[in-house]
Length: 318
Image (cartoon, rainbow, N blue to C red; front, side, top):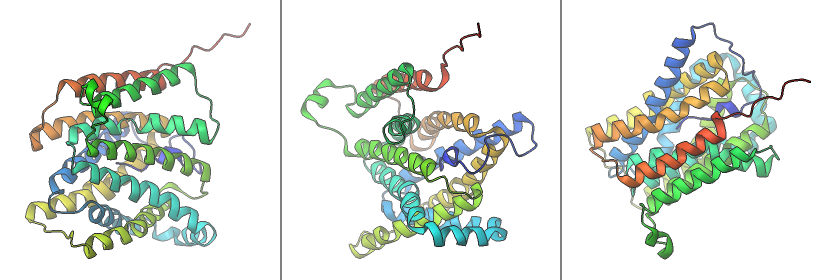
């Protein structure tokens, strides 16, 4: 799952990197393909590695790999830590540790396809939370889109069975996924409101570091409770994927696509992640799409279209 750099207000949404749009879009799509692979790797590794252990090592290794890229900006980074360190810790901990930890907990009980579909809810959750916390305007179509997406999540969580809703018999993994999407929404809104005045890449490294600090006590609690990792070779490879191609490289490419395309265009590509998760889960984990996936996904797609893609026509000047 990528950091929502579209929420960072310290740099312009205009392209700062000279690159053909086809290459920029290709980079953005590759970013979300790598991000989708994290769901597969996390599901694969879940029997061998506890969720908070994975959350800790993923963000720590990603931060360490990216540190050399921001070595010339340590002075403004340190200045920000000294003046707003607690704020950085809270926001980074929420988005890069708690949100991801919830997702990894959920993947121990739910399949990757379901996770990918539910996590498509993140931008819509962000929109609703921004309306409440920041007073941002929400159009009627956006409200209908949020409602449609909510219905879609209910269909998936209830697995298409009305009796599940009536008896409140939910899969706890899917509930953890919903909690992760909501946590990401709060993280995005708080990040936008904070408006840290620093370039995107140094801020990303600081937030990843805050995520590692936040996940550390939860990781140590797992170790002390006896829930330790028992990694095989395939497990080590999955962890390496989450930290390097699905971590540092994915974050770097997303940052690159933001600079090349602008935040709005780059963020819309997030929805390709759901498709990639479904394909990879089928090919690698041998998971199957069920009718409730398709029905719930259809409601979410309608919600996305209403909330993001349909824009009211401007009234011509009289």
